Amino acid sequence: ITDMKKQIDVIRASASLPYVSRLVKTEGMKLLDGGCTDSIPLMKFREMGFTKNVVILTRPKGYQKEPEQLAMAKIRYRKYPAFVEALSHRQIEELEKMGEIFVLRPDEPLKIGRLERSPEKLQQVYDIGRRDALMKMRDLKCWLENH
Image 1 (spheres, one colour):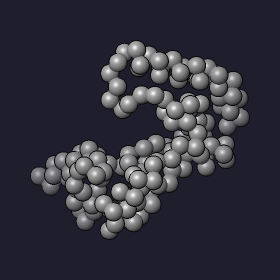
Image 2 (image 1 turned 135 degrees about the horizontal axis):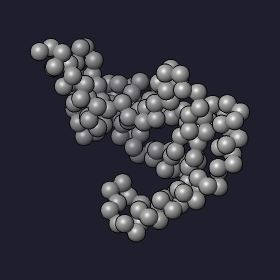
Image 3 (image 1 turned 120 degrees about the vertical axis):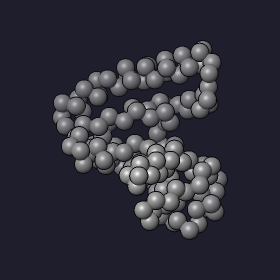
């Protein structure tokens, strides 16, 4: 029964969104969905032995979370400063600069919401992504050959 409770707690934690959900308390830990601080688990992939990681982003280079979001996190999670710090720093651009990963991203902000349902808008965004990927294909092949 304790194993089942542990599994249920892990599942609950993985679906616990910041700001919306309560922290899941299990085995002396307080948990939220790990994707909020490590949405692209590159370090885990590297630990598993994957050395050629290609990351596909939906935001243009230089995008950062809005300061209001981080201010809200500082208030909501004031008892968890390490969590707030993790929310504000992502490692993608650093690893890209070092040549450790290859990143595909749009050149411009995508004009689409998270819950978009319009087939036309979804097709437009797909077409932008495909165009941008094709433009980077030669660079990607070169990076793959050299890593």
